[in-house]
Length: 465
Length: 109
Image 1 (cartoon, rainbow over the protein chains, first blue to last red):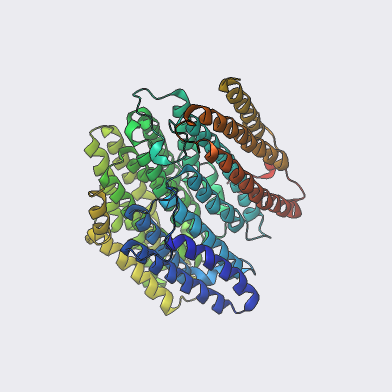
Image 2 (tube, each protein chain N blue to C red):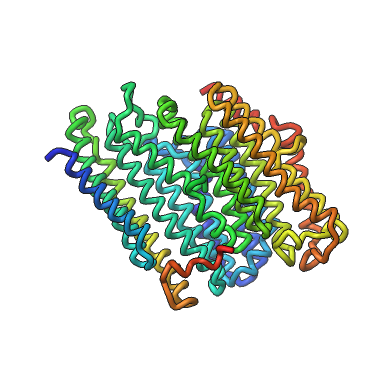
């Protein structure tokens, strides 16, 4: 509850900060203070200190899984603003409004991670989506940004329509006539066609939102067209938070009848892994490659949706952290580059050894090499699928796809270390920027060596439910 | 009246909306079709609300109210979407003097 209130209030404060002051540094610092407060408030919520105690009528349900997902989202946003806050100023004149929209997105995220009613899920998804349409199109003079915003908006509202039809069907089929997720499932062994179509429509619309194939076609265009800072925000924080909600919905709502819909999830997972990894191989621009890589990583996260075990929940939290940290780091470096193609990275190691070294750690983590957080994230996901005993073929296929993904991640490393060229940064990065990159890399290594540092709170909760 | 009629009507309206989104090329018309989809859902929710009241109203006197509240939320969200969507379309029009989505191919290369 703390997170929802604080993020909404701070969003309004950010909006007014644009009137009070014109100083960009002041506005950025206000946002950083707000994000730190959010993080503290959310941690206090986990410890049992609430700002207000409110009767939510089973609309929201605060458990460690959702709150830990929140914490990861807030911490990642804080790091993103610290690293790339200055690049947000270059997008346009309305810095305060961009931050306000980011806070509203965070409000939506904290609804999506802790919903217990389909109404709250719908509201959360919309509170995330509508500010994102604006952020995508925030580079108003740039045609690519316009186009991305229009495409994202049309696709997003279309998938919202599908989601609403699914919710209406589920409501019609629910035995108690309620939107509460835990009361949706009927005790009857045979699922009614109305309910099954509702589940499938929700599956499709959530797949749209997390860009799982075959509903991913908007992703590369939107991620490519949006200003790079906001691409970084969308591809990491928003995506993993919606995944937390996705897993929550299918676990608590339809977990008992998993056998009925698991095959559809398996098909979507296989398609996402295949299309994401194969298409990423052929990209020339690193930004577009990262967009396809985000589709491929979504495929791995979908494995958690397939198994829905305690390990899967731990895995998704670990995956959220490892993937967000690594991708934010790469995008922060990409923002400083003159050229977004692979050639732009040629010979970076000679000119900026520190940037090249940290970038290598981020890429290794995304590829899932041991000693990085990405390895354990992938390991947990695969273990959860193997432990259910079904879908062994999918686990093997996922490993093969991870091997393919190493190719396009290593292409960047190869360009940085083994090729000569004029690639480099526009300006010399500041010491603070370099320090933060080292911090990010260190966090990824800590997650890779001691994943339990993040997970021990969650493990305690999952097994005492 | 049986609930089936309402379901058929709502699903038909919804399918008209989906067909419009998939076939039309004018951004405003696509947008109107999305609104048609949302309103089909509104209709369905109200019908289901009455159905649920008849079915479980004796046990829960409050049954069916949730869906009607949901309809109001859908209307509010649709209004918010309209304001953002039209702004995006106007921004597009200022730069390209067209709202034809066939022009949306600059990013494909």
